[in-house]
Image 1 (spheres, rainbow, N blue to C red):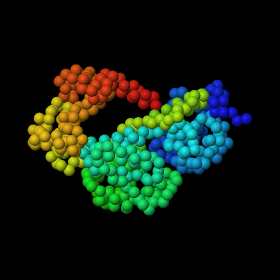
Image 2: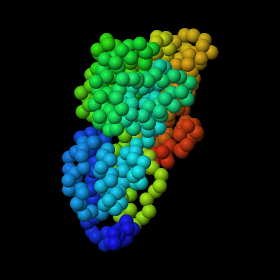
Image 3: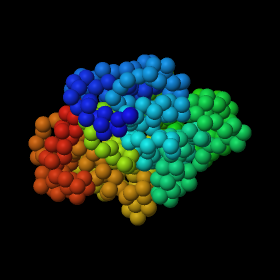
Image 4: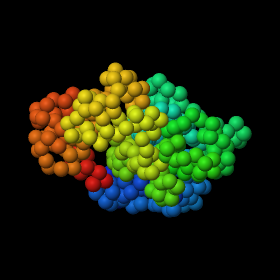
Length: 411
């Protein structure tokens, strides 16, 4: 009689060295980040006996897996045969991508909604007011990121332009879809050529982002002045080899790997897995030259926004801004809201609060000193405004920031 997963878990609980298979691609930065997170968990809470080999996202099922005698699996590979093999092994398993319909397993995923919001905010803060998304249609991660980016653009009252190739053949594997999509260079160039400028474009991943940059060069489109591009995954090799270097959203892959290992440990000890996917928010946008611009067609407003961002922490107010960029106050308000999405007073405050966050997280300076450094007359005023804008007071923010930084170091 084959024991149930719970019975097997009870047997494992007395075993000091659980046998775990890591079926995660080592060919991509995302997979390597996951493996690093798992390794840090094992180093802290192990030891585990790990079965691992170099592989890509859609590799065939390793021969050793069919006869493997183990206790738990963490997988991200896109291979239907492998899913069937895992099901036959009847051990706790975690899937680190959107699972097939017939595969019931807990999942830990990057929060695509948060990634889309970060990409949009990054482009919007640089003054872009036309937006586009370029993905690999049919690849699950790309379709989800596209949907989320369209939503955030439309929620802000704008239209999102989409790249679509009507001649693309239907493929089942993401790697096949990507391989076909990398032949789209000329079509991407023609598509971008006729979009409104300046344009903020989010690519589904860094591979597509690098292709978009090459397409812009082929079409003599200036990056970042005419088109700003942000990718996803922050694959440093791809981003730094791009021309210009590619800004990218950095997923928290180490935390996903660490948390997946912790969850598998609990499952191997007999704990029931969560039924809903677990989403981990990305770390943020790593800015490089592909978005290093203030993309505002209105030169007068570009000067106004630059003045605010350079001098907000000197204690300026809207009257100082009007002296630097003469116009009526009502006209300034209207144009700021149209281009930046908020009035000048709020933009000044946003820059000040962001600087306060940085100083709280990175220094031991007192609240009184930080208030002075960002242009506030009194620490009490900073504390009140900070809590209103951020939701907690400055000292609690410092404590949370350092707790999160310490957790990242443990990862």
